Length: 315
Ligand code: CDT
View 1 (cartoon, rainbow, N blue to C red):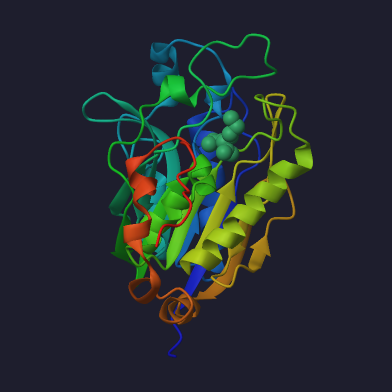
View 2 (cartoon, helix red, strand yellow):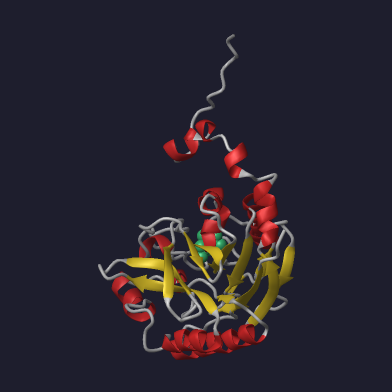
């Protein structure tokens, strides 16, 4: 099979302090974009909410959050340099940020930008974790359900940069439905940004499980959906709250091809062969040949787990 080389880079961010300016965060992204381009990247994946600290950990009014942490335009004055540099160097990028839409609604959003510096795709996060009520006794909050609306556009794959590229954000990676929506559109690559606290405020989860579940999810998703995954963390001790690192590039074989060593700003790179995914798509996961949607009705008809439906066989 003819090779389809694609230079895939992931730029992990170390912590962004609460007081750090947008301009400073963008400068860090800009430096990593230049490094990714110098290593031959066609595209670089940045984290979720990559322009500010992970603000859903703080209780405040929606108005305060929107004034301080959300973008009303993209590109904006501080982020324009990323678009200009993408065009100058011929590198695409994925960027996560907090968006106020033209209709005034708040979303946890990512965009896909091509090598001309044009926005070719937008994804608004569907699976919002956490809670909307105040939990003053918790070590920190996870208020995505307070600050963001559920994404209103669904899951898409865009044909750009000689690849089919899909997007999702953080908690979406834990849901098989996310990946299947993208593989059913022929995704070659899925870009993913995340902020995953190493402490789970909902139950005393052993810390090592956070990384295990992150990696096991991505490795199985890549294999079962025949996609390359570029996953970019915001990592390290941010305002006293620790976020896991573990940024990775995963192949359709389920193998980790590159993994961040640090919990700081770090670029990882892999010369991906997209044809590797094609091989799996033609054989074990030939969706057209083997899927049986008539037996998957519960997946779309039902939200939570219901009663067992098994009955004794009747011939
Ligand atoms: N940002 C994000 O989606 N983080 C979640 C944390 C869930 S714990 C409330 C994640 O799935 O990593």
